[in-house]
Amino acid sequence: MTDGVNPIWARARLALHMVAADPYGLGGILLRARAGPVRDAFLALLPASARRLHPNIQDDQLFGGIDINATLASGAVVMEPGLAAHQGLLVLSMAERATPPLAGRLARLMDRADAPPLIALDEGIDDEATPLTITDRLAFHLDLSELTHRDLARIDVQDPQPLAPARLTDADIEQIANVAEAFGVPSLRAGCFALRAAQINAALAGRDAVNSQDIKAAIALVLIPRATQIPQTETEQEEQPPEQEPPPPQDDDDSNNGNSDQQDRLPDDMLIEAAKALLPPDFLDRLAEKQQRSGMGSGSGAAKSGNRRGRPLPSRSGRLGGSARLDLIATLRSAAPWQRIRRASQPDRKGVIIHPSDIHLRRYEEKSDRLLIFVVDASGSAALTRLAEAKGAVELMLAAAYARRDHVSLVAFRGEMAEVLLSPTRSLVRTKRELAALPGGGATPLALGLKEALTLVEAARQKGMLPTIALLTDGRANIALDGTPNRAQAAEDASVMAQLLRVSGSDAVIIDMGRRPERQLSDLAKVMGGTYLALPMANSKAISTAVTAALDI
Image 1: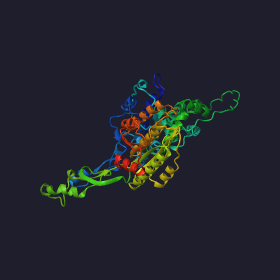
Image 2: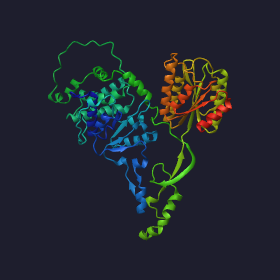
Image 3: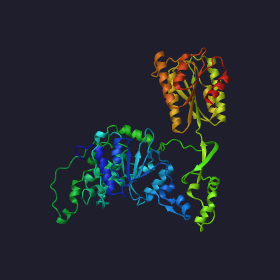
Image 4: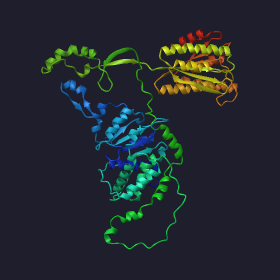
């Protein structure tokens, strides 16, 4: 692109130039980058008039509506414009957390002919991704995650007046379509964006018609980031016919009618080969990661619906809007003492005069669902009679958890492996069936069991649940995380997993089922920040009662 400039950063410059030159035709930019100097440098180039959007923005803020405060103060309906009426750039922060309703509202906005351009900032990791509803309507997809501050160079992006797009030919349209098909680009919008980008690139260069350089730039910016396959290489090359003398020119008019552009146009196969060089070396790995992230959800965790428990909290002053619920009684109670004074100052007003300061909103005490994770030692060192008592205790606690509508999960470790026998569920029947089929015997991979519990804890946190761990073991760990029989390493690995569980903030209780109290388990409970209970001779009911009391459930 430009000498001395990282090609990815140079493409970012070109994309900004194009959006500035054609704000209503290219939709905007999807910027995938974590918070840091690279993203800050990119955002610093945006005009000061750019407005920020939050994933929790409400309809009235986006599309406008009644200004409640101004309406109450004036006694007449006052409308406020939303951000959709903004004539400048919009920046959507944390786009990977956009909910499906917000994605639909933004899509409706972006489908308007006068829609402002959008910069979607994607900070997602793992399966977090910006909804396809939004990304499909953005011409340029930039990934700056691999750049460092050393790759940055100044980008002089001005605010040019919108440019008239350059002229397209049928051959240009056919060539873009062929390249999109070769790279498996599924969206028709992408082909239209590529054509528009080629026209704007030519207009920025002062040309009145699109040439091969413009098409190559459009492919690099629009089609390559959307590629889903690598085009097949031609195995048989057609024999070139012998060179022929060029035909004589017809007349002077034809020579000046754009034929020079046609002569300079690259064949489709050469253009595709040039485009393949732009694919990253790890394209297949990135494609697999993109397919895992795309369409799987917003990455914001499961929506918490129906999780309100306990008594309502006292209402408080606030501003109406979004999902806020008005406490009418508290609002009227706040406005009542001021009615005589307000009527004296506003004699033309009738009825109760309510000011914005009188508004009170309802509040509720919201509690997350609890996930009770049972981590059961099924090794041979836990005698079969003790394992039977542990199963009986788990069944009793399961019945209590079912009555509270808590989620439960079951992890068993034995031999050289740990296994999640039951993912988080509320099904008491399934849990009892998996527990009854739990075999015993083998070594004690305690660290592996704690590792599986940590995975469940992290997944529960992302879904807004409150995980709690109940570990039932005799503490005689002898299998390390790598599967090797090493007691010292096994104890150290278990301690590391316990520290990670403590950092996660999960409540925990460790039940020592051994015939004699194990000091190692007591130390492990301290590292984990949990409660240690030594119950060598207790039956299932006693174990269940102790765990319930320790976890306050």
